[in-house]
Image 1 (cartoon, helix red, strand yellow):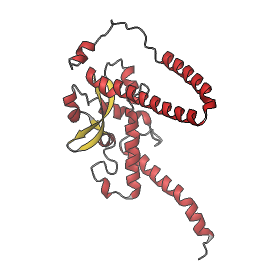
Image 2 (cartoon, helix red, strand yellow; image 1 turned 45 degrees about the vertical axis):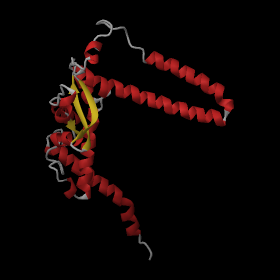
Image 3 (spheres, rainbow, N blue to C red; image 1 turned 90 degrees about the vertical axis):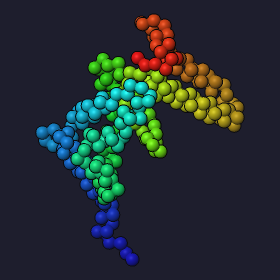
Image 4 (cartoon, rainbow, N blue to C red; image 1 turned 180 degrees about the vertical axis):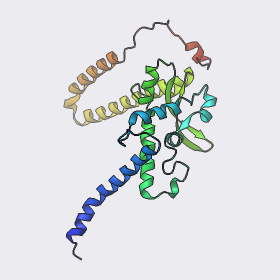
Length: 232
């Protein structure tokens, strides 16, 4: 059966029509919460402020407190966009457009909780000169694994969900690089000198980048508390 020009045009334009409809619904969700400018455009600062206000209410004082006090990805999205489709627990009943809206909102809100120094909420904590640290973790609630975030002053939690996690991730990357370079040298031994030189230079740069300035509060501050499982 021959395809008409009209059918071809419809097929080619359909994805853009769907995207526009989804984007329109996302903007409606922002507007419903008041996260827009006077002309109706999305206002990220208003949404970020709302997310910050929610997250700072989830202070975890101890490891035992984490499962109950941390906030999950879905809970955070529902707290920031309570009027949006599916945020009342009816995700399975949504049409395909509103499901996509839900996923976009959940993703955008969760992205604010990146624990790196430049993360939106982490950065604001620093600007307010707070000693609290934003962390993410995967925990179990009953039988299910759940991604959560929370803020804390607890040294054990900062060590386990922050410092240790980042260092282990860095070590895994280094190990994967070692395996890849060894594979290349086995197949092309003529590149061994170049690889060794580049790795040496890379290690020197990494060491310089990771140099930690001398402590201004004394050596081993806090280590006794960590060894005893205490908090700040």
